[in-house]
Image 1 (spheres, rainbow over the protein chains, first blue to last red):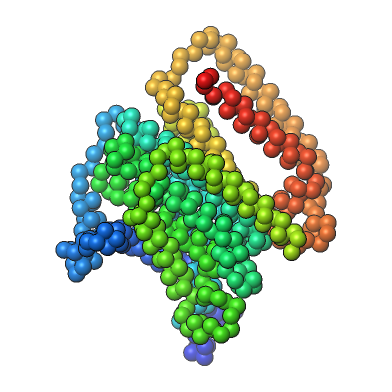
Image 2 (cartoon, each protein chain N blue to C red; image 1 turned 45 degrees about the horizontal axis):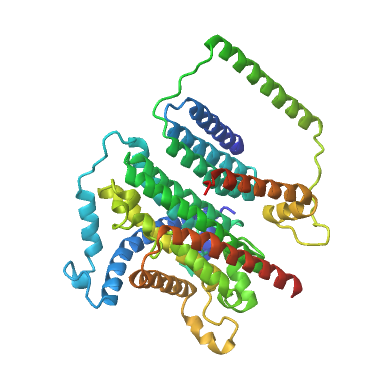
Length: 360
Length: 173
């Protein structure tokens, strides 16, 4: 409908799209991607500060306080420091793979955000925008595929450093990651069986229909996914591969400057992805607490994306809390937990879910 | 038109990475080119509207199997290409014979598939009225009804492979 030159848009802002159909198909997704990437990168940078502050408070001290009021500018100082550091590549290291490894670590963590739904639909300047970049009908599998690609970053980092300690640490870390991937995938299968769809938006809508968050229907899956998520992101207590006391710093020993920063940021981005996925699958995504209870509908004044961010933040806080509290697992204990405890638990959960779905 | 451009670009990438796999000097680079090859094939699957297969390709093939290849390659850690012991003329003759045999096979398959242009229609209703809206549902349905026996055989095969690997790697106490 070619209405160039008419002032139809003054009647209703949404009619703008009649003039410029390009905006809906090209500009809005591009803007969404830009906003999302920037928000994620800023969030990841400030996660560093959050972690240092929370661990400090747990240990009855204050954390960074000098740079900016209460240390708020600390991540910026860190970023400048890492950018200005000397960029060392070990002798006889494979330069191409050495540079590729941090990139392969970071990119899957960022692209996993494409299918995470922050809200179903909001109206902004007359355009109805869905707050997710894409609603792929295999969304959950896409996220699992992205995390399985990020394993390469660790293996390649260990290999490219041309040094024994990073190689062994890289192999250990990737063995840990692929072991816990199995338990996580089985948990995701039982959630898919409960929701009936692989699409992330579909799972939240299924929780809306069921009227209750899946954390109450599948508590075992919830806990197992969280533990698996801790192991997948190499977070304490499963952070043996990258702890400073073990193997002189793990797979990123030979990395310095911006490459090291990329590994660091990739780990925090993975944490945010795991928290967002757990929020979508178990805590109802953008739904308010108790979505089926009419009496609490006054909570609806808080927009959906704010609930989502709040729930993700709770998960991130619990990640940091656990790091500050629990001692580290030894490597054989870690593998035993993954193979002999979490996988049977996930399998049992899947069987029980199947039985309940068929009988009810 | 756009489809043809996408297909030919992807095909060029797939073939290019495939050639790089066998001509790279460094074995780890070879494996990395293989990963790139698989990722391009996954994009091709998306272009064919087989999104489930595309994601499974990345998850299982690129993200699982090639990781294990990489483990082995890194632990074996070859610094130089092992020298060939065969007479080079004999080697190229054998190579030519094997390559032409494979070419014959592939062209036979293509001709056979083109003749049977009336492919089996997909069960749209799923038998008992289960709504089939996407790739995943249809593949799942077929796998557990029409192709159940091959599925069970494949899982038995995987179990045997796992047990074999554990027994071979076990140290005699």
